[in-house]
Every structure is written in structure tokens, then in C-alpha cells.
Image (tube, rainbow, N blue to C red):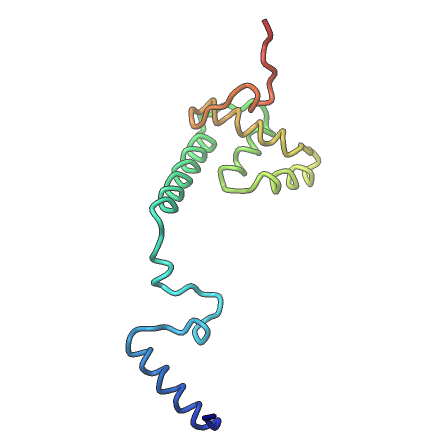
Length: 137
């Protein structure tokens, strides 16, 4: 049995009304890019922990980077750490430095960040991770 267009639309609207009464929100009619609230509320503890630790990490970085008592090795280091503390990605820092006429490779930027993370006791790295050679005996 095939329904006519009018019969189909009547049946469809009847079912949509039943779903609305049960609390269903049709994502396609609201905003196709939005996420339903019941899905957004289902954050896993791991995601929440990751967010909290990331937030805490950047808070420590910004506290240290913008503290007037903090000493930097160079103006370039201060600029890099200031941008990084604001959440600018390393690749974007590299492009900004290039625009200023003081280019650095991405690895050099990473080593600057790691050097200050260690100095401020935020993270710890091995000599290899800092780009230093191990001493042979």
C-alpha cells in the first residue's frame, strides 16, 4: 500500500508531534551543526579530566609568563612564551616570528617552551627531549 503525498505528510507530522511530546529534538530542523544537549551532557570523566588539566597547565604557564618578576633569556623567548601562554599554536608562533623578521624553526620554538616549562617546574623533560646531547663516559 502506497500513501499519497498528503497522507504521508499527515502521518509524518503526527509522528513528529508524538516525538516532540516525548522530548525529542530534531537536530535537522533546529541547526544541522548543533549537538543535542543530551549528547553534549554525556562528557566522559577522561575528557573532563583532560580539560581540567589543560586549563590548569595553561593557567600555570600564563601566570609565570606574565609575572613581572620572571626573567627571560631574550626578548624572543619572552615573545614566544607570551604567545604560547595565550594559547597560540606553535606553527602560528613560527609564522608570527617570520613576519617580524626573526624566524625560528618549529623545533626551536618547542625547545624554548620546554626550557621554560622546566624552569617553572610545570613539566620535566629528558636531555634528548630538550635537544641536548647526552654526555658519554
